[in-house]
Length: 56
Image (cartoon, rainbow, N blue to C red; front, side):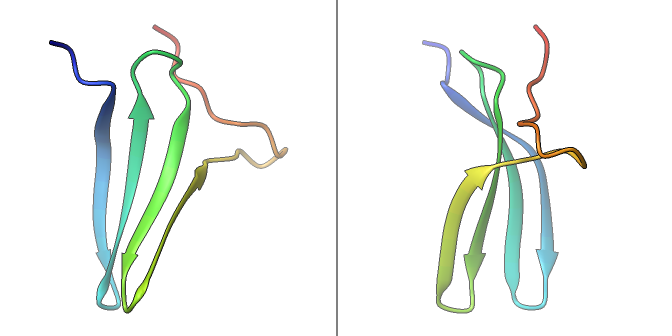
């Protein structure tokens, strides 16, 4: 079974973790943060405010 989400990159930052997650069905990139009592996930945007999508 193919995984729906994959981790594209991961970085430790000031006691927390930032990950770039890719939805393998849509190609949409998400930024996910965790640590320091906070966590969240939102679409990753480029400099023009467009959602970053990996082409298949």
